[in-house]
Image 1 (cartoon, rainbow, N blue to C red):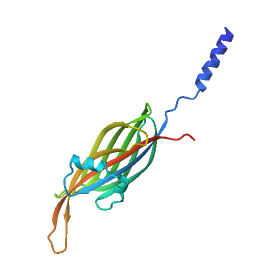
Image 2: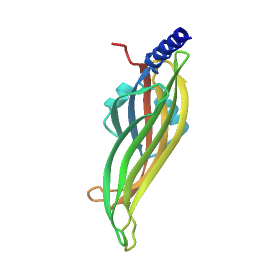
Image 3: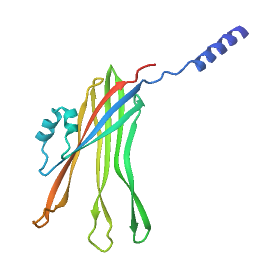
Image 4: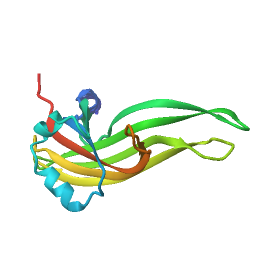
Length: 200
């Protein structure tokens, strides 16, 4: 009996000491493109854009901003978060000073399954666009949320995602001409790829 108990104790100790199965680490590569145009975007525009050489596109300067996101690492099935924000402080008539975080938040959850990568992506963007015209002069923010974009891809395969469109009005001034209000359309596109972290 004592011998049996001793054997069971050894087995229990071995089970406790055995390392737990660790999920593989996924490396995420991402770029954000913001394209600015003076005409309304259509789905055809996005289809044409997705077929372009994006490296060449990033070298264009007029009407295109590119954000290269540092490589993110996360265990398979866990969410990686990236944010590029700044605090916008403004005065409230009753509460005093208030603060709003403006910028982007990107949440990416990759899962390795059968040699491929399944992904779920949430994108939030808050932009300051101006003040109200009443006496309060309260700030106006444009808030865009794109939840749960999902799909799957092979390792290293770039995925092109449309993260939404927005519009605002800018006053264009040219010498000798009266100011003209111009509608500006913006489209945000993400280019994302996944790979497993190489074992050292």
